[in-house]
Each structure stands twice: as structure tokens, then as C-alpha cells.
Amino acid sequence: AKTQAGNLRIDGMKAGVTAEVQAGNCDIAGFRGPMNLKVTAGNVTARGRLDSGASAIRCQMGEVRVVLDKTSSVRIRARTTMGEISFENIEPAGKSELTVGSGAGTLECDCTMGTIRIAVE
Image 1 (cartoon, rainbow, N blue to C red):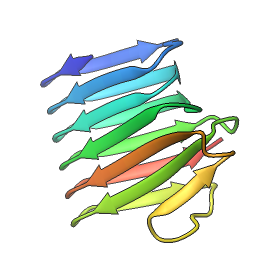
Image 2 (spheres, rainbow, N blue to C red; image 1 turned 45 degrees about the vertical axis):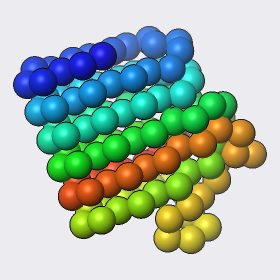
Image 3 (tube, rainbow, N blue to C red; image 1 turned 135 degrees about the vertical axis):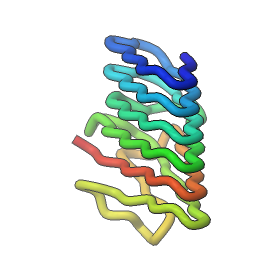
Image 4 (cartoon, one colour; image 1 turned 60 degrees about the horizontal axis):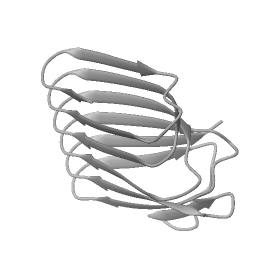
């Protein structure tokens, strides 16, 4: 999925998802696999489950909120330049890494000047 200046909603996606948001809003609900999100200056909200494969979030100046299902199994690594990465309802092992479940999948988060928030519910 790709949006440059509009709004996009994806619901009930029972597979992985790839989305690029340049200046719009993107709402993804129900994904069940690896995701690849690239956000230039937009907003993305994604809810779903990660339990295998390699996933990535690249956020330049936008805002990303990911709510992972509590049955997810993923190892999360986060890097930021001038942006903010925060975790809700989970305790990171350090400043930049945490594991949900057994850590079968991976999620690489890279934030330049934007915000990435990750929660487990």
C-alpha cells in the first residue's frame, strides 16, 4: 500500500503488509505476518501479530504506533537519531532491544526525527 497525501485504511489483512506513507495517514488492522513500513512525514497506526520473518519500520519525520497482539513472538531492535522510540506495556531489556514471546521474528525500528511507539495488548 502507498499513500502520498491521502488517507488509507487496511482492515483484516491476514498476511504481512508493506506500506509507504509520504504525507498521509495509514491505518492497518489485523495483519498476521512480517511488515515493512516506511514513513516520511505521515502517520501510521498498525495492529496485529508478528511471529516470524523479518519486519522493519523506517520513520523519518512521521509518527508510527504499532500495537502487537500479546501472542506475538518477535525480537525488537530500535535505533533513533533525533526521534523518539517508546514501549508501552512491555519492559525493554535495554534502551534499544526487547523480546516479546520467544522472539521467533525480528522487527528493526529506525527513527530519524519522528516518533515510533510500540505496545503489546
